[in-house]
Image (tube, rainbow, N blue to C red; front, top):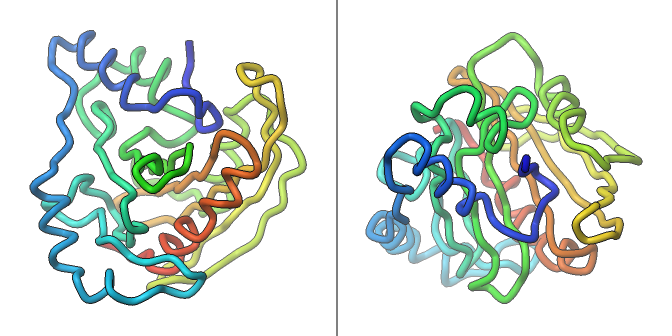
Amino acid sequence: MRVGAGDTGRGLVLVALVAGLVTGCGAAEPDTGATASASAGDGAARTAAAAGGVVSGGSVGAAGSACELPVTFDLAAKWEAESVAGGGQDVPDEVADLILRQGPVTAACEVDAKPAGHIGFLRVWTGEPATSDARAVLEEFLAAEKGVSAERYGSFRAGGLTGTEVRYLFTSELLDGTKTERALAVTTPDGPVVLHLGGLDTAEHEAMLPAYELAKRTLRAS
């Protein structure tokens, strides 16, 4: 079964375990030491509330962090990042197409909101360098997901990056309901990056928005 951005009943980390078994390797373990290091380095940020009422609990994306990405951004306090096995790694194309890839990007990192008391994830997807702009990347990303409707696009700037953001409705066959979701995309010299925020339902999605906005506001190239 294909696991897309809208499937929040279980995390992509479980999918990573499958990918690890197929390739004969164990799933990647959370880099708790790196996460602790990043959090300690951002101690000052953790003591002050960011705009929107959310407190920063460190950052992710830089070398040595839980997920090494083409971009870095701040994590809301207590949210936990974990690299998705297969994102940017040597996984057979047929496996990546089935469970890790959506449109032009592949799952690379999953940030879990459960330790902060929410049910949902902020997921990061990365792709190979190409000529597509951020809007085209986002459109392809959504086109690869069934159940998407009522898309509303806009642009934003952060950390020297210009990106595209979309708010839309997702109708889940698994949960038999419709909910609001958001995603944004930027392009970097190392390829496009998509950040997606889902949630168990619209209420959970809205409750997690401050963490998403913090990530967007602090986004910058690695």
